[in-house]
Image (cartoon, rainbow, N blue to C red; front, top):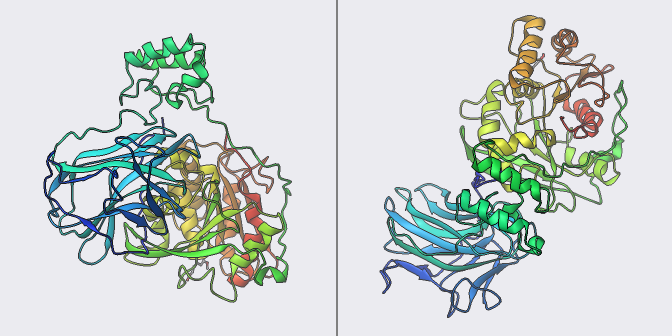
Length: 541
Ligand code: FER
């Protein structure tokens, strides 16, 4: 299904380049260039980030003990070892590690990752990844992985795509290119693969038939048997598996429980209302603003991530990307007297006006990127980076999972940021369900009609109805952008793709005009206060 083997594109910041003992490449008796069994100690491994490691006899893949990794405070925290002399950049080796975890969700995506310096900066690349079944050993292996040319300061480590749960590692081995290294069989989440041999075929159907008549099928069935994703193994799973193997269906229907829709009382004609002035003072329940750097399609850039008070990486959060205006940057929303929107978010969340969510302030500045084409960097770099690291409704950062989570993702911006918002609407509707263009018009299409037309055409091209995207636009009546935005809105009102009301249980498009307000964040932040609570209540169905 969708979650399979997808990689979280995560260029992760590593804080502690601690002094680690290193493994050198001398072929041992069995021909391995490195072999760590954790039978007589930690074999040179160390905790990555703040994680702890120790050997443990509680479970192991082979022998009597394994390495146990705990106290992780971020998904990139894990167990690491430095590769010393003899592992050469540009050369290809066979890598294998066995991993297991015993608590938390039924399945979890694990990565066997390499960190290295490319001459100017630290880089990360995945050696192998797999979605693992809780309580089973699984092998992360790649028989032909090439250490990037020019790499130095190389280490390898085990991490998760999300979450901070404990895990075990055992029998980590490196051998010559192409070597098939023995490891755990099965243990990977592959719907339909009851035999856990990595493929879905008639053998699985035999297992499925046996299982359905077993008196103990609940206990025996692994998550791979539950192809209908209904949390139990039943006849419909067998029927679907039969259909899949005989070629009648090409994928299993996703019956995963849908997130509950929060009841929300919309006003149909929302009027501008300022946030209480104390909302811009610091709050007793403060979220956190974290500076992040990523290496995307427009080079190395920074953004900020606001995580709400008591952020829990095991929970899922709605996410709102909020873009600055022309001449501004990623600092604008959190560090100026006329913004400080983290304080406003803290108060709104504390007072129950807004569900806890993640707010990201990226930038369209830098290396050739302009507001109007940011949508490209947004989908290719920013969303995969942020949502590979923070816990949103995206199960992974694959295009399928980003689309599946689009009703939990919003994008907005002010002025040139609004220009970027309309462009995101035109180009990224498959990954964004809510849009908040503030004080800026669309810069595609001839005249007001052409602008509106290009947006309506995009809705059609993506194949969405007017129940599947929601636009809350706003500006001030005295804003310099008002004469640009208002005619575009009037044209959009005539088009069937947009139904005008701020009651999103009925329509999908609204334009709030704040009396007398001009082109300034000091006003515009209040539009965010008014509009953001209207987001994330619809299912998009
Ligand atoms: C508008 C969209 C963007 C607008 C102004 C801008 C005046 C941005 C201007 C700038 O950053 O200089 O509709 O109306």
